[in-house]
Image (cartoon, rainbow, N blue to C red; front, side, top):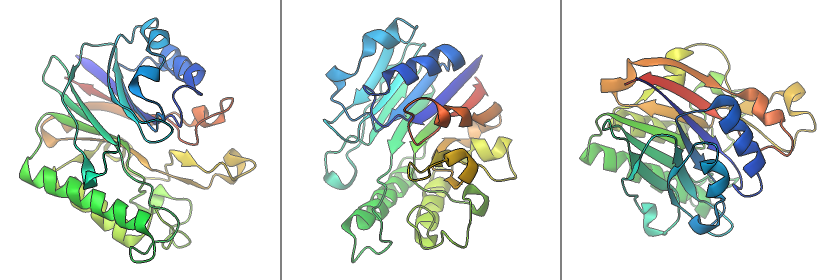
Length: 262
């Protein structure tokens, strides 16, 4: 049975509830992972999404920042969460489908502006968060699992608009890319988007600072969907809905999709 999983940094689930409803009506993924919900769980407008068929949700929320949720048309069970770096931040939640598929939804810290852990505590937090992800997957190798979310790193040269110019910009620095590669290897995880689209520039985020984001097209692929090798080969397709970045009052991220035949 085909299952379509999507991930989207919504940048406020309440503010952008109309866009979320548009996505659910237009694209109808079976499961949608959201990041940066910026709301306590009881403030998420679940009735609007349930009316569109998304009756199931597991989530971890915080007022004003962070927040992750997994919404589904299929029954899901709460599979828990981890408190990375002992900060009690809502950056991870997991759900279990009836067929045994486990879905992890992550919001990795952005890391601030200065790529130096000694001068920038936010960058140190990001590196430590990634190290804990790596160690967890090494200790408990996942099976029949998907990892989705805003990982805040564009790992490949063609995942950014200009590799050389961004080498010292947080999200594409060599140390971040190496840390993310270590997380991926620890699974091991397969990058479903690049499995389906192996070549060419590919972005899921464009800064609000650009007056015309589409014309400038200075994007980065920060949002990812990975799967364990036991199910990765069943992937039918993976896409990024670039047009969503141009919707009214949009998130600066675009939704990413992957369809697996499970």
